[in-house]
Image (cartoon, rainbow, N blue to C red):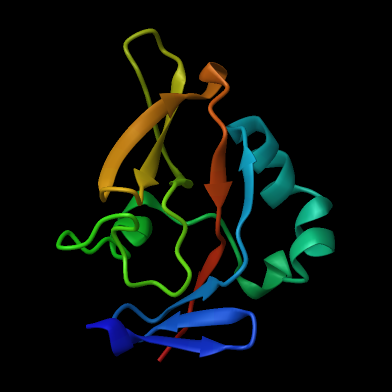
Length: 132
């Protein structure tokens, strides 16, 4: 299923999910930096993409679609995927009532979570939905 990805300049289209991914990655950065990066001025400046055009941090469900469990290092056929961890926008409150965010580890294709205050530094790749 490797040919499901179409590279178009600095974007990658996943024809299986109709998601358009940013080719370039940013990081590693903490989740606090992600919030500032995606939610404020730096996003347009650094990526050249516009938030009003639908670009955002992916949900955990969207990131998981890039995992291929028969691969490792990286566990994905996504073009030029780093063997590293990527933040998602998906979160929950843990037992200490602290905000915890999910991530995907593309070394082995696993999902994990970090509490926002842990200071973990992961990568970011933005996404948007392409209407058909």
